[in-house]
Image (cartoon, rainbow, N blue to C red):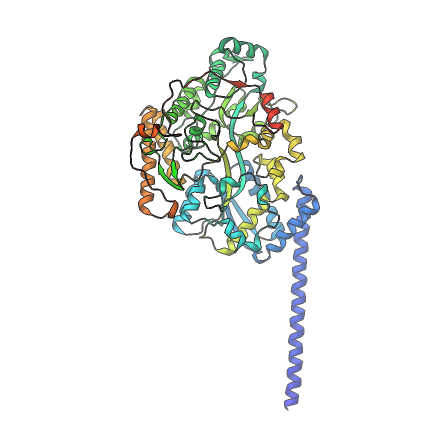
Length: 587
């Protein structure tokens, strides 16, 4: 009997073993079929969409094969991410999310909402701990917030730890041109750049080249019509086209364009480095030290002041000068309707063909400014306009940042479940991988990789982009940077700007009073954060008041009022400037 039992058990064991082997083989074949299906999808996308690329087709397929294998544990999941609405992110939402699903089996919902809404929602998730989105593309302006509060994942730690198995071996971080903007004072990367665009000077190159206009300008102002180096020249050119030229080809023209409606986007008009262009802060890149372009002073990594009386510069003479020039030019040299426009309403105006120059122009508008048939585009597709370095104000000195650069970056919060975070991290890398990044750059014109900027494809495209490629290839680009780590709570502090500045535009207060109110409001936030004691060793610690004269006597910012805030205008020939950039020189 025992032998019989052993026989039956042995046969049963053999059956079970056979079934297990069969199941294993079937499962393995199914997995192999899946892998083959995903590889076929990868080949289709490489052939039909992801071209050109800085990688060969073989290298692209190898990179995509890694995504196929790394995504296996997450197949069938549905992930939600969010970004603001610009051309680059529309391409990701409509095209890359679909490609990612077909290649990995992870379904993506990539929501597009206004930038202010992104900030509001990420605040909500940080404060509530509820997982609203699995991944966020939010501005690197929040770097000071993210590294202080401890809600954001350190990508440096994640890539070396929990996320090591889902981190792309060919990610190549040194190839990214914006990681200095997304690194905290602790040396750790908190955000991964997804798109970048700068705030430059825009002008009608065709008008500036006209011999009659050049001669008339020199006769009136005593120097050449060209790219303005300083605000004095910008002001002269604005007056020239608005008041002296008045009409070109039967159309009323203006020497300036801006926007002034009291709304949240009015705040970006100033936090996006307007004060640094005037010369408010200190020397240093990517941001002034110890005083940055918001006028906030830090000691070590602790914010200590906004008001001049405490060592800040938000209400100093340079900041007030910046506000006065903004208001003066908007009212005197821009179309009357500009005063009531928002950022979004004013953006398309230069493409209508009656604006001579704009001092505060985002390169994100490039794609919309090169469309065939526009008044500012030649029949051969080349633009009648160009972009150039921003002119600087009277308080600016060599070694200071010269303008703003937006750097929308992938950010992950600790409140997101780890499996969802890993799946979203795979998608984030897919959006910036070398397989996809050059095509995305060509579509949205917001480059993030040096290899893309220096590619043959971008060189061929350069003549139709008005100086964009030359700018990003030049050593000058490092002087355009986002809000830095001095700002300890960007969502709370950014909203203070439009509210206070809106009051001076409406005539309720003077520019000096508006900046005094703003500085005081910022200091109150710093004081509250200090009392709350939730930001660790880099939390604010407000300086005692010592008075303006004490701080004016110290080196650097805040700077005392200049006797002459309008030095002689200075311009540079655009073609000589571009030649310098192409040769690797700043000017």
